[in-house]
Image 1 (cartoon, helix red, strand yellow):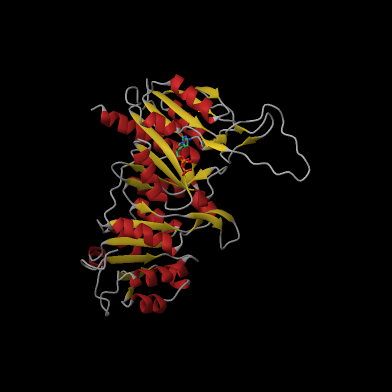
Image 2: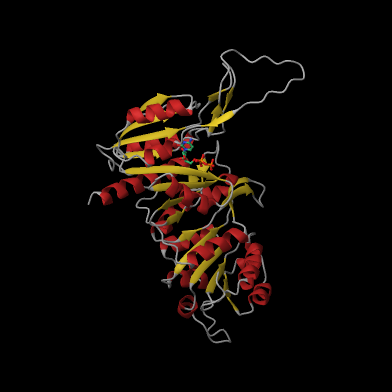
Length: 417
Ligand code: CTP
């Protein structure tokens, strides 16, 4: 955040939850960045932290009462929201999400969230069952369609002792999301939420999907592999088929059944996968989801390697072809849309942007692997295109698949207009 230019102003709504204490840390960090913070607390938030703590850290009055215009708090809900560059709700409770999604305005927090035309960023925090409940997920989809931004929730141990998605993002992650929102992040509009499967959107289109890991032999019994389960790739192939596409799924070894309605081709190595992808082209869309092994053993042994006492084994690894880049950078015969994934453990957005450019892709789905993606049933991703990016909340791999397919179908239709 540049200290030059007008001081940025955040309206921070603190909802009622155990994560409210992290909102105090958030205020402190925002103030350190010379961002002005005005705080609104819900009645429930006041049961977790005191107004006085928030007031002392923010250095300005804290608001909580919708009808308090007669005392020294002279700003009404309209002025409160008008005064801000960005409205942040942290923790955003299930109750707050439900109120926002349905336009309820019974207290100061929900009223000002309704009375604003400013960007809103939510940092949800709630029990895992509440987060995963269909009503909450429905509300999240509605809010996303309205253009509301989300950061988190994260998966982990919760204050209530359960494990799963629902924990509020750490203040550092919320700050990053705030900075991105303040910098006028261009958002790509994802056309359809998980509630509405994109029926027949890809009728008469051909889609190739790679999925799963690859196995690179060391000798006839041993191989190099990785933790990919194939769940995300298979879900994408299934979503494309449900959208009416003719789908070729080229998968490394996985413990999953072939999805209905797709032509499945089973391979072991990266080189075999590339061969099958090339044989399956041309296509309208290519989606590289496989966790292709980057290296293979230069000279796999043709007989089982025997272990001699005290002797180490050194393997020489050579690079495998980059299947996604091979497809993305094709001249003639390049699919109209090429999408890939980026599994990152650091610099998520920067690395994903690099992959978008270097591999000649139209879309990259970026995963922070620290969030536990491999083998999990849910996924938290950022979808990047050349036009912008969309931060998605944690959702099932099926829902992410539907989102991606809906986006690709809309992009394809847009290209042909
Ligand atoms: N990919 C591919 N062929 C490879 C390596 C990766 O097709 N040999 C594709 C993957 O299917 C994914 C994307 O490239 O869509 C990114 O994969 P990822 O493992 O995140 O990145 P790498 O390119 O392997 O780079 P690094 O491991 O250095 O991050």
